[in-house]
View 1 (tube, rainbow over the protein chains, first blue to last red):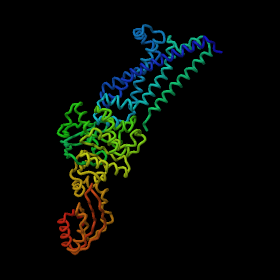
View 2 (cartoon, chains in turn brown, red):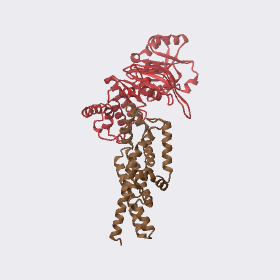
View 3 (cartoon, each protein chain N blue to C red):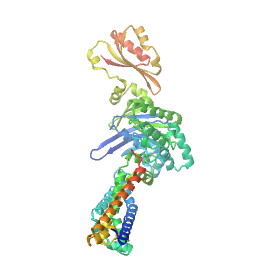
View 4 (cartoon, rainbow over the protein chains, first blue to last red):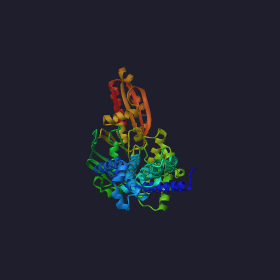
Length: 219
Length: 335
């Protein structure tokens, strides 16, 4: 039923999707974490209380989250070209994916930090811990399971976004599904890509849950 | 050791709360000092002003000759490292084991790994948790969690320990054991303990001095024995009622007996002497005991009797004078 050529195409497309999702998630986490930390700690009554900064950041994050991905992708093409020299292909698709995921990650991380008992942070303050110490030795370890789940959610989201990125030549499973499955009426390929996407999402979620579970010591 | 000079603190927001309205207070070194008040009295704000977890709007807070309000953030962090604090809800780090929780302040102080290990061992022994070092807080009971909190607070050998409702989340049995641990620590390590509570029993069990806070105002302060036996404010009297069972039953009050109803308080050695029987013999009157109890204030024996004196007016007046001469506190309740 599946010929070797198709199989190799599916394989390449899967690898492309994994690259986009993996790189996008990693970069978005690296760039979104500081933003999330800033968002959480500048909030009223928090360790770096800065109402103006907090509101400004919150506004930027909300704007970032409200731009539809497909529009964002097209809108930042010049930026993508500047960064990777092209706006087509898997590497190029990583740029809009990352940009779209940063505010998402930041908001999730902010939420994860909000779950920490303020009393624990107060206890650290009472011991003379400085804000950086509180962030790295208290907030991040305490919120780690929630942070892992936030990253997992981001990765799952990026699987969906990466399929959209396929529409403008990003490669990957979405691209394959559109070009072969949709435009050439190959229902079998459409089905196969969807099955792979479903398995991918399941796998990512299970892995994330497992890691979070292992780190979870709270009641 | 600690001095508050006209400290005020107001929380503005949807409901403006005047948590402290000009509190001046001296806390001596070496003892256990209790601050008691109902919830909302401002005691939580008061204790947080000592290590600047809350900054006063005005007034001065002195700790060991240092004006805390004026410290730079860096100096304040240093000062906090020399002060331990424990909390009502323990506030342990859930991601760390008992060992790592106790070690946390030592890590902050940059103590070497070997020293951390031996110090944590000592502290675990002090609080009786040597077999729990590798468990996570989630697996501990409330009393054990507070013991971890105490060990953590003592890790850097502070001179001052602040206790924020440290036993309010614990059952009576566990409360007693945690309080006796605090007393042992106070006696053996000689550090000053400041605690806040809404329970008179906590004050009675371990405190040397007490301050009564009501609506952000300091109603009275002094030695526990003095404040308990001679309350100067209505707030104190109200809080003592529950503890002493000294509220007069309505039936007795309405009986309108011709006899004089008095409350007698015996402190320390007086509690051992047969003063009542001497009074009956020397003054030839009848005594009807309505209620009595004997208790301890920290280590001081303390007795309380509710009696009716049946005799002529002169006999009663002389009997009261006799009691007062023998250093028994007499409060005439009726007529």
